[in-house]
Image (cartoon, rainbow, N blue to C red; front, side, top):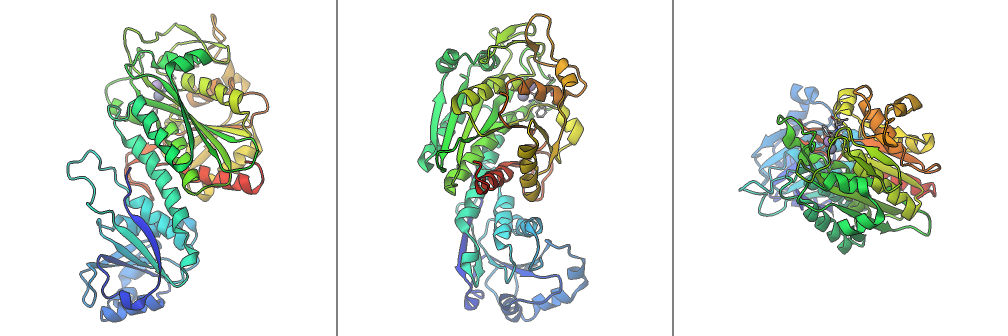
Length: 490
Ligand code: BES
Ligand code: MN
Ligand code: ZN
């Protein structure tokens, strides 16, 4: 488990600044007025802070930006980091400012003098999230000791370090899972990492192939039947609430997607190690909920399979019966995610009768064509539920854009020999995938489908993550769960 930095909050002690070892981060508002700790750093450095603040360089620095003053006189620290951020800055700017600190840690401890900044918790979260790097398979590995980021503030109770850490650890869990190569994160290894959540109080059950066979999850099993790795469904239950029906999160966990017999082209196929991204987000949310002991009932179910071409693999033209009982004609074995999800979604509703169901999946390349890497595709049968999610995603700055559903799209799935085909035409490929899923949503189950193919893993750094796995959705879903709990709905 990657932990890039530990968060700590202490009472501000001006006299401890001079001898701090590592990096001293000073937050300065846009008007350049120095807080008491900033004044102390300025005095110790013989006016270096004020000189910088009076310069054109400070003027030119964007809010949330950072300037490093290396090896300053008067301090034992190896650098002073000056961050421009107003006292009343909003969530996203505060996180961006924190991210600037996280990116400049250089594997060293940091002392953050946040002055009177209101959203210091968000600065802290930004610092942790951006400091992440997945180095498990690099010979040099991570720093020998995990650096500590200490916020020295006059009111330590204003920053809930445990709550911030719980969110960050959830995001890291997701990012680690998504980053792992498929020879490491096999279906068995994935299930075993989820089993570890039991130590945090999550109830975890692993359904094996024989169980899935008995339940009739034939479309899920069909996807995995060409792989040496056994298919699994992992059921995670967090019972932090009263006796209300749980919210259900369902994730696509294809540990590697070759496309199967409808094999993908070689170029870029290595990216398909992230095809378990939906299951990764579900896992990260469950971890955060447990770490912060969220007062909500949430179940997370993930379908974990590998899609391989093989003598035993499914073929185009095969007809498979789903757990629901509907039959599916396989036209393209690369449209496997929906075949995994439909059985897990059906099982989720049969077993838990959830108050709402959200599925997450790296489902279609078409959603990347439509929305790029900025927004996940959001599909829903319930406006109120959908709007609640869009609001939490927007608060967390996790891009999410609602897409349409409709009968004409669904008609593309008609099959001559079975109840449906597993693909439509190229036109509206993300929507027909969502229509396929909706056929497995019971009337009366509020449902959201999140197509995260474009946002789960990206080729360039984002505000709060390095290139690669982002952990998109962990924050938005945590917030949604809190909002629903506050409204008495989860
Ligand atoms: N896992 C892919 C979708 C994907 C593409 C995820 C790019 C992340 C990045 C999915 O299983 C898939 O192969 N979808 C096909 C569907 C098609 C066969 C109807 C696609 O998008 O091409
Ligand atoms: Mn595929
Ligand atoms: Zn896939």
